[in-house]
Length: 159
Image 1 (cartoon, rainbow, N blue to C red):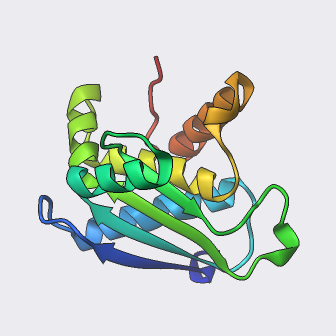
Image 2 (cartoon, rainbow, N blue to C red):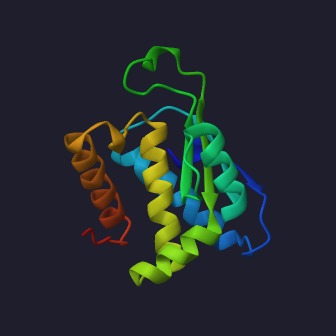
Image 3 (spheres, rainbow, N blue to C red):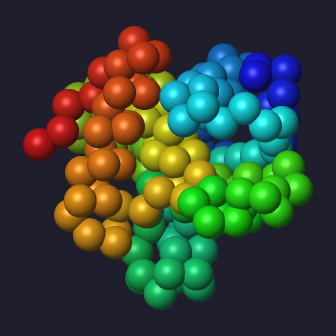
């Protein structure tokens, strides 16, 4: 599957350096999620690194939520219902590295672990999962996230 995943990176922030190692981590997180979900089609994902100001604008514009968030997902494929019409592009991930750092500090784990978690979370959204549709869906998504992070050797604690 690794050679069947193409990720396009875009950096729209200047608060954190975008290292090759960070890009490899993002790729590994997306790939682990696809493998966990047994998604075996060639696909493309766009990942944009941004800051709190820009993600705040996007969150307000697309979700009508007037605050910065950690990650936004823009699926282009309905993995739950429209699987036969897949054209190769899963969608876009927009990640606030500024918010990821804040949350890593708050939760007491590394920046890298937080970025990996947010990429797993966002990729699940790209595949059609939604934790905001009910308690069962939230529990299901949390379970998937935890199992994927454990599979990557980056276990995450949830309250």
